[in-house]
Amino acid sequence: MSKKLIVVMGMVLAMTACLATVATAGIPFPATSTCTITITQFPTRLQCLTSWDPDVVRLTPAGSTAVPVFDRVSITVRVRDAFNAVVSGALVAYSEQSGIVNIANGGATTATTDAAGLATVTLHAASGYGRVALCADGVQLCNVQVRSPDVNKGSTPLLCGLGTASSAVAGSDITNPTCGFLANFGPVTVGVNDGWDINCDNAVSGSDVTGLLGKGGVLQYFGDTGTLGALNSCALP
Image (tube, rainbow, N blue to C red):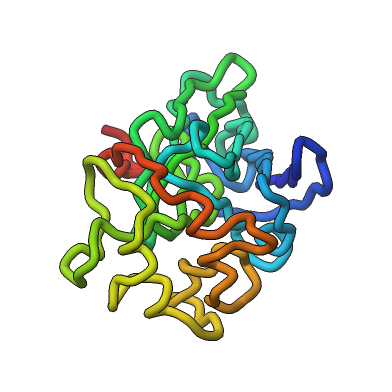
């Protein structure tokens, strides 16, 4: 089971529950494990937390050094096996699961569960769009959805993939004819253009570029730069 704490500007707003799967003794088991997901938003955009499943976390490759500051997520997990016994010593880490999303180097932490099966990890820097899972010893326990104003590496369709190395929020994120924001304007179709809906209003429009009241759009994060790391598999190394 997974729990969700929604935090906006440091205030806890709600708690809900979800998730389930299959496993054996000593192996993390989603149905008996618990994720408590704490999302801090800057600026506030409750639709990203109430209108989408999993919740949307808006990130840039600059992460905690972004100016202005953007979102971050912290997940505290208690890992148990299929027999409800705590699993200590499990490696807890984030993993890119779907879409075109890359966590920046230093943009997420890892941890090992303690004697009570507890660990806390954070995610604050990434580019692209897609699901990021929290895994314990290679078993996926819960997910968040990342959306970013940094969606490509340049102005041509060949540069729509993110890959590794340096990446920045720039004009090509708006103008690329295939994977720029302008090319994806219109009502959201999940799996088609939802990754560009960074204000979570079910449409990709000028407000995703300019921000709402000058906040939370591509333009506010121009120049935010980070180094994207290799994709992390949920499987153990």
